[in-house]
Length: 45
Image (tube, rainbow, N blue to C red):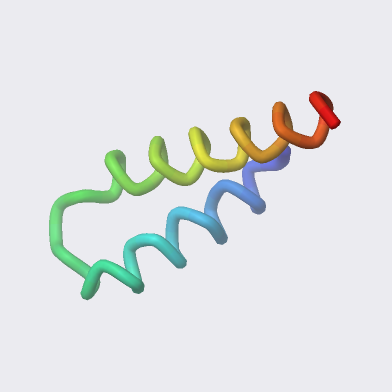
């Protein structure tokens, strides 16, 4: 998982949630968490 992948996921989450101001860190962490979960799911299969 790269910084670019996290950035893209965080932006997508932020965009889908109507682009609220002041939540950059929250969306970054949410994106990172989602990508990690997807990676774990791939490894489990």
